[in-house]
Image 1: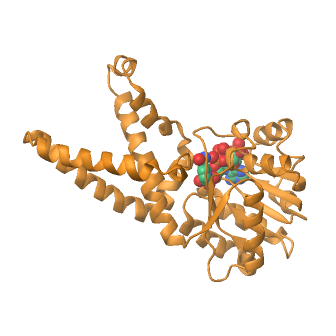
Image 2 (image 1 turned 120 degrees about the horizontal axis):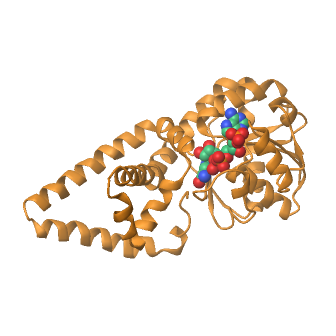
Image 3 (image 1 turned 30 degrees about the horizontal axis):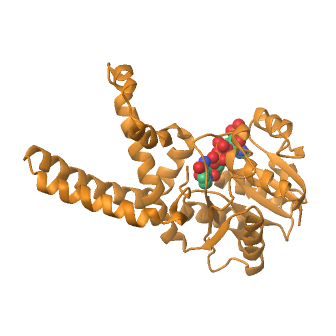
Length: 295
Ligand code: NAP
């Protein structure tokens, strides 16, 4: 049972954790802080939080567990502002989608409280954002990755693990750098591709006409381009090395496909497409891979 949980950033991710723990009766009191009064009021009205704090200081005072779920670009400032006001045994954890940048920001900002920081990333989400997008079942049977570092306190790690399990998630540990490469491949690169495709089509004069004939495949693929722009800017800049490497690899593959089309090389296309289909039909048929994508 968590006595006082502070949610910093009461949007989809922060709000859903609060709702899940409340529904399970595993938290006594939830205090929420968001930059805008509108988000704080909305979270209060929706019953996501019990109290809305006017400042970070007020939000974390007396908190046993602090969950930081703001866009990654805001994390360092949030850590810096909360650090002097954390009680000594408070545990801080986060939801940032790329871990290296967040871990380094926490190391710089939290000082001697860094050992009570447990880096985390719920692999769950939707393309919606804000308090109204939050729901208690978001984490049910979804994976949460924790990326403890050498300094991470074992007891803090276990408490964060339990919190996520109680919210319905399957919890895994991973090394920071490995996490960032894996997530760049399965989530960050696909988002960049979807944003680029939808952005490209939206610039065409005949865009409305083109979209009128969009089939299910386009709808599936383009859904993630509805995701929040600020959040994805921060992820791209925060995980730049892994994303740039994958973009390079992707571009090489695209160039080869382009060349095959130009040269009327149907055998090459069959080879590439059939290999991808086999991989999709066999490896992605594993039910544990379903519905685990970030959004
Ligand atoms: P969201 O729905 O937009 O919620 C973020 C909340 O943070 C909003 O309520 C926003 O409200 C508040 N906020 C923004 N800047 C702030 C600041 N400087 N100080 C305090 N509050 C601030 O976003 P989300 O989808 O929950 O994502 C939150 C974090 O989880 C991100 O780091 C993201 O990378 C990570 N994540 C997202 C997903 C996903 O699929 N969405 C999945 C896994 C992890 P106001 O600006 O109105 O105050």
